[in-house]
Image (cartoon, rainbow, N blue to C red; front, side, top):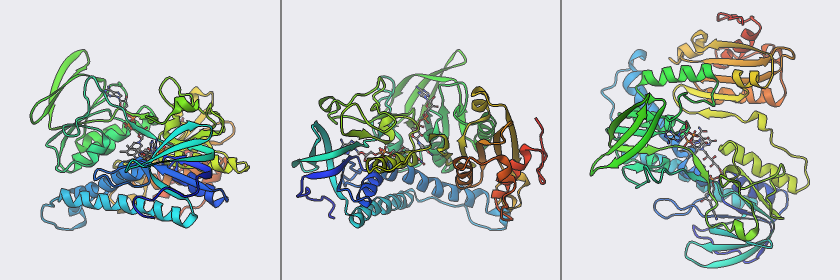
Length: 486
Ligand code: FAD
Ligand code: NAD
């Protein structure tokens, strides 16, 4: 496959997927594995106008952000944590151009992998724009303007999402006021960095640039921090991030943004007072909107909801016959793994299989330091849903491995049903909890009881022992930490 594949000669497909991000490309691959003739059209263009598959996730989201989080964490460790191990280094320096080059290489390796997977699975992958024409037809426009019409028995919309812009207050200018993609691409560390929105992007990218030396303030409109996270974990996160130097201002409503030649001044209201602050760069990270621009939903009869998300039923069917939708464009959790599962499950359903997504076991991870991860119901949600709950938690401070790796901040917390003992949710903050969370997801998926986890042996010394200890703590059996009975 070349960088600009020529339009497929055969015009008729079993499945046409519009969008080659996590919702789209796995759907096309799974369709081909099941013997369906699959076409995936993707319109992503990188900054240098090169096309690549993988959507937001591989090109401007999950993967590049994690590459920068790793680089900045290592930089921070070299400067602040090596000494305790007895490692002496002169003051570490950061070559931002080199860091960005590595980030690009990581993204390219992943998006190039999608191209290879398409070849291996005999998926036709085209770079360009797809538009719904109705009657099972899709108009394909290549990046050089050439067009072709394809027919699909099934058409899947997987066009993803785009950053929400505060058009009136702080329109993006690609320089001083940027979205998350712009913030991944800074060529130098801003001296003073402002971020509007203390959500997942705000804290992840705030961590990156703050570790590299930016004096970072995050302005959050809501009075509470990370409201989707279990309250005990969110409280610990706020404490840790504040200790690291992230200046998180809650209940801060931005009212005006004025751009100067070299900086940008933000006016906001907090606690009834009007305040101003000047930054070198301002990141706007206030959520993402569904992306259906020029998709032809109106022509094809695909109904959108009041917020612009494609309306679907439980089988991912839109209001138009033969047209389906998955991933960010449909709403719900805007997560890559949720989009992947939806695309794969939909295609398996189209093939007649009984396949479904378990929406009660979607893991969430925030890749800060310490990391935050959870699955299932928080204590507050479980109570609100009418469960009589029992909870147990264990701190990483009681874990030998955590001490050995100098990462004792954080805890694991179980929320279980007091009557049935079933695990309802697990919430974590601490080292590598992004990885530990997989065990919690499996517990929910297998409808495990707390006792099932208590009776499961965990290797020593591993961080997973804290997961085990937290399950023991639910019934007051924890060996290595205090059992707080409730
Ligand atoms: P997208 O990935 O947005 O892909 C849609 C694709 O469709 C794009 O390539 C787009 O160009 C293309 N397209 C749109 N319209 C058309 C058209 N008409 N014709 C052809 N192509 C079209 N999620 C996680 O789970 N973990 C993370 O760590 C994580 N980190 C993130 C970090 C950042 C900075 C951002 C912004 C997001 C992050 N996300 C993360 C969210 C994740 O990227 C999305 O949930 C995921 O990419 C959604 O997949 P999707 O396929 O629905 O959409
Ligand atoms: P978000 O919804 O996580 O956070 C946006 C924050 O901005 C919220 O706290 C909101 O209250 C606040 N806000 C909204 N309007 C505001 C205003 N005018 N002034 C101040 N604050 C305001 O959205 P995001 O951080 O932009 O991320 C977008 C999506 O990308 C999320 O749905 C997330 O799931 C996904 N994502 C996931 C990961 C991950 O899985 N690790 C990483 C990055 C992004």
